[in-house]
Length: 292
Image 1 (cartoon, rainbow, N blue to C red):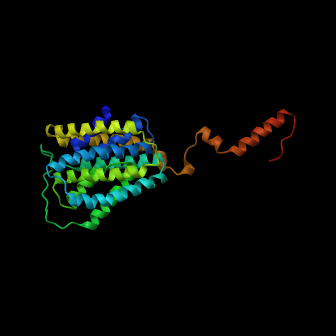
Image 2 (image 1 turned 120 degrees about the vertical axis):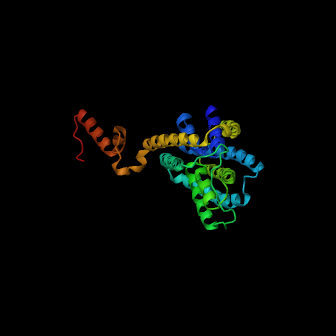
């Protein structure tokens, strides 16, 4: 439950990062399978992001038009990604998740602009510029598929897309991103129903604690240096992403050249093992084994 609160705090303090924390916690700390963890992370982060979006809505930081365009396409992509997950092994999904963590760390390290105490980037944009609908649709579809496959909310991709493509202020991009994350996370979770067994009681309690955490994170954000927080989180992503990628490195090795354990080697030759066993038994009885 303390870790659930940490997930909420990260969403409140950073405007993202909840999914990237949730999947490793569910897999490596709580012992759930990769697919169950990804499905539950969508529910946990989706509900938590929805609460954050409500807070931003109250102060006018949610662009409903953008949320409907970007979020609608992302929802379709997320459902598609969740249904495609059946063709991926749990190890392959975790390896892809680790790559996403490393990409997120790269973007966090790359940002060098100082962030003031209010948490808003010093970014000047033209609000009157026309929306590049085609680019927004492509970005929304790509982020959605990624969400469905590996369970990330995609805030680190959505916010830059809204700022650079839709030309919206940073605070509005964060609020709109939280609403989009909530929309597509719900769709992705629905896509996993029937594929995995969901522990509803545990997930509900875990989600409730994370939602309390985002309230605390939203309050604490005014007292914490966002630049230092993002750098520390980027280091965490780099370490965790590297470890998860190393643990699932077998995904990138062709099946024919993967090293086999002794058990796998014996199981791979059942016919030869049976012939040898038969020869030993016949010899013990004084009989000659058939020439094979």
